Length: 216
Image (cartoon, rainbow, N blue to C red; front, side, top):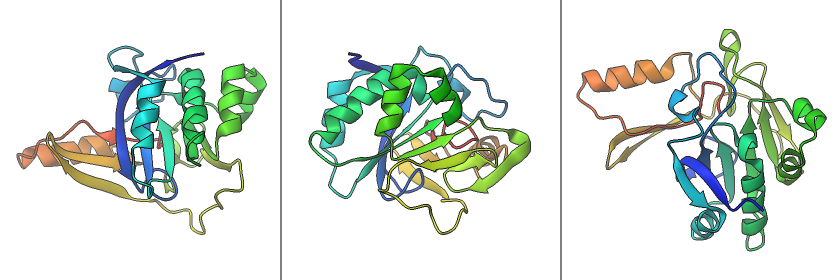
């Protein structure tokens, strides 16, 4: 059993990367190279933080009860499916978590490929956002960034949102500066936003982004 994960960052509370209030774990590393990736620093599989499944489970278990879900972003979560699946098993033993994940691969590709770790994690998900970001099809959609991407509701825990518009961007102040979270509403959002902030002398904290402009 995989007992560690390579992590870029975590956030304990957000309302823009899935239904309700959720924690988010951004895994490190992605084999895909989608043009327009908003977080190229997360593409390498090295350079992050090694966290144990037990450590992450303890962190999630210590969050207040109003945090009802966890979203896996990245990077590419399916590249660390074994560890994420072990984490879901661990935390659901104590609490009925809603689990959502992003993947640059389509669900059909993952099922056709048939890797046991991928299939195991898919079976645990309530929601999957699938497909690569396609800059030419950028769209301001709920939890995703281009029109080719799909929302798969894999259980009856959540209903599709009545409207498919953007969930918005969250801005927050941290000890390191201003941090933004969410799916970029327009192509080039990160560059434009961070440039505008810096010209005003505002420090940009490491972004808790959706990993690329596909909303991951």
